[in-house]
Image (cartoon, rainbow, N blue to C red; front, side, top):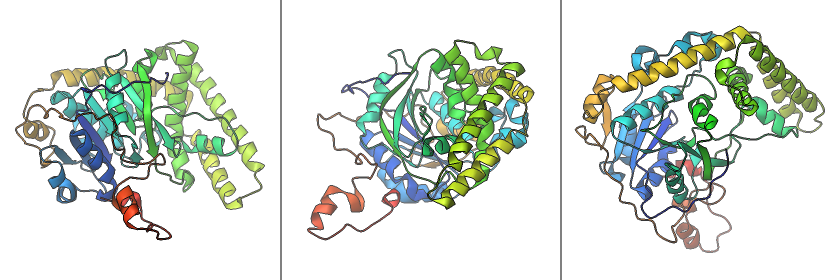
Length: 412
């Protein structure tokens, strides 16, 4: 996977932005602003602290007929056959995640495919795209030998807890493109997002194997504390082992189908050795004892997670996932695409909210016009350039000592 430098042509456009969210509705401010600038449809898949009614109340008037909002019920993936997979039953106490991000992204794929969307941009609610043209650049990459294009995530690194500990203690640590800022061709996508950590790696695996994943542009992830709870590290470990093991096979030039229990034994030993090395470096930390203790607790939780799965479970999960891929594509092929949006959602036992027409069969074509000097939506640190931090507001503040400190993610 190599960075691709492209200029966004005047006819480059984005059809849909899909945001899976469970945070308060204010976290959608950037996605709404981005959809306004790109004149594209915004699909909000809401649960938890975010409700469809509140999204419509807050942002409905700003997107005309381009807002689709859906409340995704608790346990929806288990109740709806379209989104239920065999791999979910493989050691569910260690393989599945409490998050519903996977089913929301899968739902976005189904809706996008039905509505004829090609340029589908997945955006997490804690991700900022400073230059909106970068999203058009990612769309322009589609069809040039690439089936997906991820924005390079700057700001806070997008890693697992163990890998954050590795970076903090001086280890070399890269990042991979992820579903937080990812452009895909919805009509060509064959993968799905399993309910396991690193689900986006699984979705991209075949494209990565074909060297069909590009990186272009920049996104910024908001900071968070990866060591807040050891449970986070424990819940990530199985998915981290699987994803890194599979991409390790690709690096070796091997097929993922040959990853048997013997391979996973080597992968697990390799992972535990890696964690031991990080733990050794953490033990040499002399500053910030509170941080050191929290890192040590997370690494211990990651190590203990290995008691809950075996090489055979890893091999079984992979076999089940490969079976699910075939089943997913069979289900997609049987979907009666081209039906009105409201009817399609009703068949999936979901209710349409927003300003979009329930009778529409294809999304409205974007009319965004590229300008030679576009105004960015955020600065290089991901701080939005509107609301209390916009250039106009700062200028109007005159020579005041400081601009009021606000959570820019809450600025509508």
